[in-house]
Image (cartoon, rainbow, N blue to C red; front, side, top):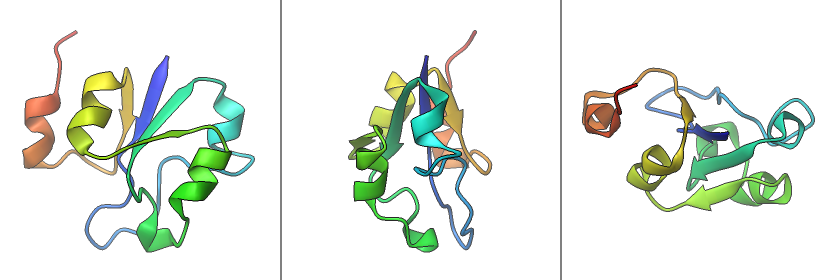
Length: 85
């Protein structure tokens, strides 16, 4: 399964997937994230990469490749990425 994290949105500082022991490295699935997923939380991309995540440049790339997307709530601009099923 490919799991993705949209990361921080707006004023939010929490993230759905963290690269540490409770997050990316432990779920044992392919993990994608858009660039700077946790910038508001001061977690650099390198920590995600070191934990095994793959960084994508755009949200569209993340949405198109993921089976499950962790998000604090889909934004209207993301509705076009939804798939049926």
